[in-house]
Image (cartoon, rainbow, N blue to C red; front, top):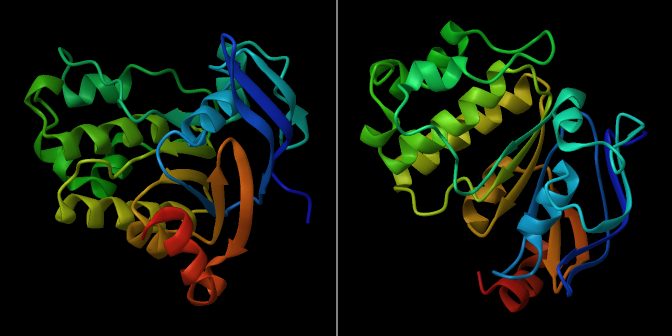
Length: 233
C-alpha cells in the first residue's frame, strides 16, 4: 500500500548544527505512528521539518503523493497537514471558543464546535474562559481541538502528554483512539512509552538524528530489552 506520508533521506540543520541525518519513515492513511527517543535526538525537528517550519532541510517529503519540500509554510497547511507544537501556542487573551474559531477552515470534513465539545467536554465547560485561566491539560486539549476544526486529515503531535496529570493523559488517549476510529492519520512524538503503547499502531525509534528501529505494536513484548537500553523505559 502506498504511504500517505513519506519522508526520504531527510537532513535538517539549525544554522551550522546538523540535526537530522537521512531520516526515512512512512505513515499509512488512518495509522497512528509514534516516534520514540530521548531528549535531543531529533524528534521535534523531524515534525517541524515535515511541516516546513525548519527551512534548512534536504530530502523529500510527500503527502498523498504531493511533494511538500518546495511549498511555503502557508501552503503546507492547505494540504491537510496540521501541527500541534509542544508549546501549544494558544492565544492566551482569547476565550476557548474564540481560539477554536480563529484558524481558517482549509477543507471540508473538519469537526463542528458541537463535535469538538463532545470529544472534549472540558472545553465545553470552559468555552468562555480565556486561555490564561486554563490548566496545562486544558490548553493541550484546546491546541488539538482547534486543528480538528480546520479540516486537517494528518495530525503531527509533539509531546502531547508532557507535564500533564495522569487523568488528563488518559483523556488525551481516549481522544487519539477516537481520531483513529474516524480515519485520521497521526504522527506522535512521545517520551511517555506507556502512553504511546496504548494509542500507536507502529513505532519508530530515533537516535542521534536517525531512525534506528521500526516495528508494529504487536512486537512490543519482543522489543522490551531494546527499549530499556535505548529509552530507559
